[in-house]
Amino acid sequence: MSDLYATIVVPCRHEEGNVGPLLDRIKTAMNGHPYEVLFVDDSDNDATVQAIRAADPNALVFHRMGEQRWGGLAGAVIDGLRMAHSDRVVVMDADLQHPPEVVPALLSTLDGGAELVMASRYTDGGDPGGLSGPFRRLVSGASTWLAKATFPIRLRGVTDPMTGFFGLRRSAVDAGTLHSRGFKILLEILARYPRLRRAEVPLRFDKRLSGDSKGDARQGLEYLKQLPRLRVATTPLRYFATARFRDFAIGGAVVAAAGVVLLEALVRTGMDPLAAFGVQLAVTLALNFSYNYLVTWRDRVRAGLARRISWFLATRGATQFLSWLLFAGLSAAVGLHHQVANGVCLVMAAAVNYYVTDKVVFTAGAASARGRRVARWLVAGAAALGIGAALYAAHLPAPTVLAASLLAVALFNTAIGALEVRWRLYGWRTRRRSSGCAGRRPTARRGSGSR
Ligand SMILES: Nc1nc2c(ncn2[C@@H]2O[C@H](COP(=O)(O)OP(=O)(O)OP(=O)(O)O)[C@@H](O)[C@H]2O)c(=O)[nH]1
Ligand SMILES: [Mg+2]
Image (cartoon, rainbow, N blue to C red; front, top):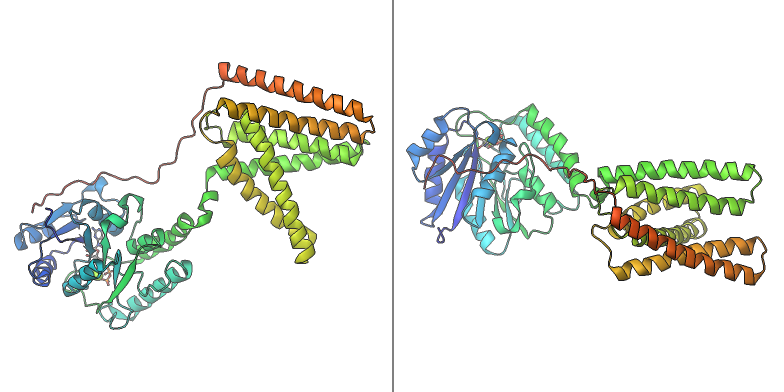
């Protein structure tokens, strides 16, 4: 099989009238180069398989049955990519709308360094003429426009993201990352792999030789559903489109609201607003940490509590400082209304807090002994600083403030160390969050055909 030059993957469904002429024309076009044709057939009967066998007993057929028939046309292409034996793969329709004579041009473009080469109806020299009727043309034009509007950067320079005729270096794409259903598999490849070296060759789209089109309103609907999903799945913001971020945001909003109520209540009972703010800050920080520890990141390993607390405080402090800088910039320099600037700061802080909490605070795995020690001292230092500031604000003499702060450092350090030992010895068991599986994916199986 090592001398195999290319695999031609042909998704098909009830194409018994087309596969014979298709195989003949592929053979002529390939002009002696060693190749394999792999049909991924979703027909409800054996007619297409029999027509393939009669035309070329060496053609490979994967006749998908029942459960195997996932994802329709796109799923068939993905299964074909997985089962192909050559690194150079061409995907084309069975109905001869894709002239096999274009295949050598696709393959030589791959040989020239492209990783993905599309046969385009809309590039110079191409022609969508074979589209059946003005309505199909309208649908094709509208869906192309919609795709380009949804992915203006990823589809820059691509004239026909809807084409089903393309060549691909199999090693450049991991078929396991593709989940498309319906007709638009190329669009998913373009969206998920924007860095592929891409090229186009012109395609004069022919008329279907025999049989009926499988494109219908249901496929159109599937496309409309697929597009936003793919947009979310490939956006840099996908990091935030998770159940974890939802938990984080809900908890954060509730705690912030509780903080507002607490501050108001404390001030109304006559507490100095600055002191009340300090109490509110301490309470909301503690609530936030506990909530995220117990709910949002409950699946992460429990060890290293002190390290997590100190990183939490340190990163929240840093975010507050960043917010303050951003607020100053937006309100003073840009001249935004203070509430608008505050809104921007809140969104920024939520995103940054989520990211650093995920990456720094609730990382999986235990902290090192040194990390724990540093963390303990950090927390103790922060606490002592807070206590010292409060006593200083209460006009206590400097020696008393200093002594109380030092005492606080020692007490906090000891208390956290003791707590940590306790947690490590009797720690809560890890409750694992069930990881969402991205779609059912049956194992690709060799079909009934043979080479
Ligand atoms: N394996 C598989 N192939 C399919 C399925 N639906 C369509 N196909 C094949 O995909 C190719 C394209 O389908 P067509 O029905 O020709 O759709 P189209 O070319 O977009 O539409 P027309 O221009 O009207 O022909 C053909 O080879 C079909 O046999 C499917 O559910 N499974
Ligand atoms: Mg067709």
